Length: 331
Image (tube, rainbow, N blue to C red):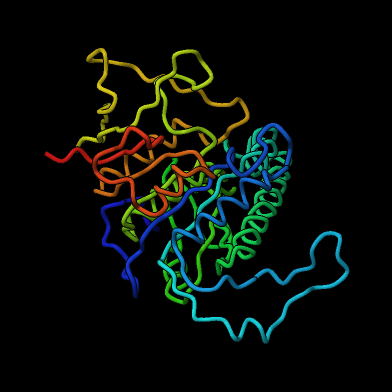
């Protein structure tokens, strides 16, 4: 059984991993409408990933039947004439948003108890929902010319024990990357060795992957510009542009300079969110930054997120860049 230990030796890739990207559920779905994707954002994010990570001709890779059409249009000869695709290695992990959270919270999958009919039914319902979103994300990326392959954690042997990753098939992720594909993982309902079942969040997946595969940087794409000192909907909310993480895992705000020595950051979590929302995101981002990997939390489908995806934020945070950089506090 593999312990969730980020300090374990990294798995070697044929070419270094440039980035792990988290597509936040609130950014790619309409979180208040059950199982509805934000098509505009998902398309924009896919195009940004293509621009940031790849070069060469855009090749249509979704050959499935489209809504409103009776046939599949693809010109194989035309694809054969395209120049070779050049791509950085990167991984996509997405949240569930309006997919899965409802089913999980109503049935209590995250609390375990697979011997109860409601929990077992909810486990199945949750996986149906989140895997349907995974297919939508993979198709959107493929339509943008990204050779994406969906990897569901449950099917790939990811399990949990007392809130820690107990086992995970990282080798399959590595082989997928070395074969020239972009793995697309997602938050999922998985087995738990201590309570039967639980929810494995996309943020936890990213932290585990980062510990083993050592990307240059990690980008969380969300529905807000970054981390605020209070819910961003409240008057006077201030964007925290840079957070420094200490060796013991604690963190403090660097930019803007805190007005008080013990300035508090207030975080809220939606009632139906079984993964911990922004609280989990900051905790996992801090754990990644502690490894010496820069983390950016930024609003999806904006020029600011495109800059983060390209790795162009820089060590000095410019006033015109809106986002949150979380970094290890180097002395």
